[in-house]
Length: 274
Image (cartoon, rainbow, N blue to C red; front, side, top):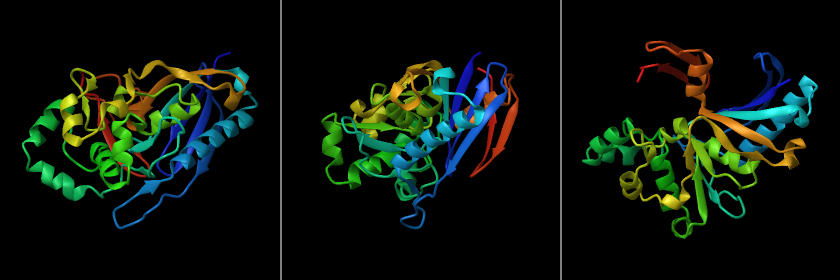
């Protein structure tokens, strides 16, 4: 039999489900955690908590299903989008808490950018409007406000990623610094036509290219999970931001089909065709 572990790292909990090849859920695990609110409009999470709860949820799902890590064929990841993390390339230690998608600390900066000529450029390259929701101004804030981080980043010592990238980095023990196109496209740094990081936007926001993960299609080999965690190496073969994952999960394969999901937020996504 083929057994797949699906990790869903969300805004208020980490969840895991074991599926067989017919899509039947055999076991689930969920671990909730608290967010941090340092100031009005600021929302953060401890990166290590995201990792610890994801691993605990996966092990709980295996226990409930009566399976072992040795039975798993592959792992897929869905994750809260836009949340920005920066960590040390050698030690894995985070330089600051994860700044999550709800955070509004860069709202004033974004209002300034909306009046700048870069606004049209950003929209043309990324397909997005300028908003603190997206990752770019979050990363810029970390680089400019945490002592010594800018220098470390420019020396190539730091990694940036959304939650999927961070979890893959942890699961592979630093062997894979990667993301998928659905997550990259929500950073305000990704060219959705060329499917590459935009040098123009990286330069504008002051984000060194060396910090960025390699971008894969959503269905690809993202790396091998270390045998330490589940008893054998397991390939990570699917990654998608949670809302795009839900669009596919709800089988919205034809143009015009729409899904709406309700959780910490409410999100509508539409299949617009090519």
